[in-house]
Length: 122
Image (tube, rainbow, N blue to C red):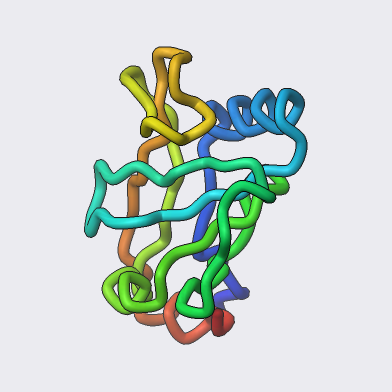
């Protein structure tokens, strides 16, 4: 039997950047706004600077930072594990990693049928 799985995870590089951003900004959060597939960029904000709406769902936590997504978008991603990574490039204009020469990047993998049955509801 498969134990419960995380809907969102992060690579060691992403966890290092999250730790840096948390050290500089205090508590942060992620919001995946838009993007339907690998290559999308989640936005990273100080917790008090982004309003989570009634239609946002909390998928989990990476590096101590909650990760949210719009419920309608989650319907497309619900069978997918989100893996937050860091790559070279420019971050989103308002995302905290902007100006560092790197950006967060969403990678993914589809859960197996056994994994889907073990997932906890959001």
